[in-house]
Length: 538
Ligand code: NOJ
Ligand code: MG
View 1 (cartoon, rainbow, N blue to C red):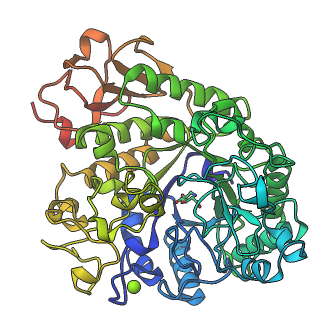
View 2 (cartoon, helix red, strand yellow):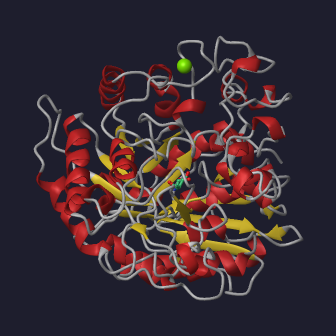
């Protein structure tokens, strides 16, 4: 029943996964065709980021119609075919729901603009009069997550709130129609056979009554999110309880193989572990991304603190931690952490921890952050920051599947026709090249996921630390598996530290038995006599 507690879910960014129709944009049939890659990797589920009609002011997170498929991605039939195929392969399907805001092209927002101040149509969004002479100043001091004020003025003089781009007006979650609409959206996708929902900016839906100023300070400093009047409000929790009971009670679609527990996963940028744990209380969501792990620097004490605090906070509500080190919003791990070896080691560390894991397409290939030429950048962050922030497109480049040059099997279109350009020099990163190389990142991920399944590591065994709290390495055991990561500046001698066991997997070829190089990670088993190629070379 509780398949999600230790599941590995693979995030798919549809426009960049695989293109089936040669228009240079990935699409749903492209995903269906390449699902064997996800199955062979050993994942349990996929999460598909928004595939709904959208003018793409924010990569599809600006939605015009929540219960349809975008033309460039396919049709609802394509979605059904994808889901059926995934289920046949034993993969669950999670879709994105974006309840905080719509696109400014959503029929409700158009209606609100046309209807004018004081109209019922404006009550679904957050329209307010401005402050100061002629109401020329925004209604309060809130800032957009993409930079600049969170308010835009419309020609009749009112302002509307958008915590993200101006093309993403925020709904008023105290409005009954908004609430009813999202129950309809959830039911619609449950009827299409999905197994769960990833809830976008799940910490932002309700704004404090009266929309008070946030006051001076860093409004978009994640560490302060729970203090902001637009984040982490108490009213969120009754809503998530309502959604959980909707998921638990909604009948399985006709023809469903077996009743499955359907899940809600919170994308809540709440960095205080105890605050985040409130989203995964028994009758609320099942999972919440652990961004504290993603944000942690490559230093043993900080990582250990994040791991301990996260485990303690979720244990208190009997939920798993949902680990993540990569997404369409974050810089690619090899670039962020300082090299491929660290990225491989961070992955082995994450996959040895108790709980669920989300991987992001291309992470298993070790893709670095790509440089996108100025004139090709799509991310609204680029414009909103006056070119100071290149944004997230470098992590959204189309997947290299095969071949020696762009578009590396992603599309039959010319490279120039790809919606985002791939860099030169990625031939060594392709799925085809790495699949044949036992020492590739892809092979490492495949073996790690297989071991997670086969080895007690996937059970919710508690974690026992061997390394001292202030050490420059991390070493812990769960049941018969010991994970050691060397974050220091010198090789580690495992025997001397009493870290015994048979190496079953390592992030690099180990130079000699019992020695763990700088930045490397090894899994040691005290139970199995299996030996991994990477560790076997003296
Ligand atoms: C989080 C999404 O992951 C991100 O891509 C998007 O820009 C914001 N939410 C706004 O929807
Ligand atoms: Mg296409």
